[in-house]
Length: 289
Ligand SMILES: *[C@@H]1O[C@H](CO)[C@@H](O)[C@H](O)[C@H]1NC(C)=O
Ligand SMILES: *[C@@H]1O[C@H](CO)[C@@H](O)[C@H](O)[C@H]1NC(C)=O
Ligand SMILES: *[C@@H]1O[C@H](CO)[C@@H](O)[C@H](O)[C@H]1NC(C)=O
Ligand SMILES: *[C@@H]1O[C@H](CO)[C@@H](O)[C@H](O)[C@H]1NC(C)=O
Image (spheres, protein in one colour):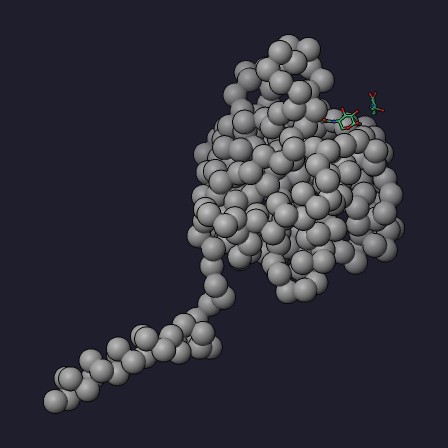
């Protein structure tokens, strides 16, 4: 009799789903995330015979290695089209490249997603954005409202990060062991391929940037300028790196300084997992996925 009662209880609890929404369960998780990546216009003549726009494979592999799929998003779509896509994807990766941060088709499309993401997060609809290199620069332009870049050349240079005191309380580096953080601050494991960036002085002197982001790391450029290399939104799940985490796992040109050490690959892998975990908090979906 007692056993029957116990079974009945389990059944009732299971059927009513009371426990699923109770205080002891985590927020809902989306284990089939899809991250959007904007295509870029082909300028290289060698590549032109393959098509007009492209996404470098390393970014796609990077996102996939964290457990997400990628939706390539074309430039020049209507805002209505972007709104529709936005409601189906779970995060955006703004990738590196070399186009105007204010007037290019790429910047216009990225700005549309940035605005949609701001509104969504304000309404409690979690939506993360990650910017790498030019993507990082774009985020600073969107937040500051204008272009604050200056010469911070670090071209084909692998560097350690000068980590700030905000790192221990950051979300981005939460899953890093003390040992790996030490390696990140001492070994040449972040690949830099840029000419422009935001100096620490400019960043700290801009109220909008300062209020929006915490600075997690800085570096010294070839011309001696100290630039911001890693940022994290204080309130929004927006992240930016001036360096290239994806190259550590997925780029192999021998004449370029792509870091491939065990620690370099671990850093890349933890950050792709981190960003995909952020995307798992977004419940947007396509009608069929
Ligand atoms: C977007 O539209 C503009 C203006 O029509 C055109 O010049 C440009 O090539 C288009 N870009 C892409 C990537 O299709
Ligand atoms: C790290 O890179 C710097 C700059 O290129 C170089 O001077 C230094 O020797 C490198 N350190 C190691 C341990 O490879
Ligand atoms: C870190 O900061 C120190 C002090 O400003 C500087 O000497 C060093 O070059 C920086 N390291 C890197 C990798 O930028
Ligand atoms: C940036 O500064 C370096 C060192 O002063 C210089 O060699 C380079 O040409 C400058 N680059 C740009 C894009 O202005």
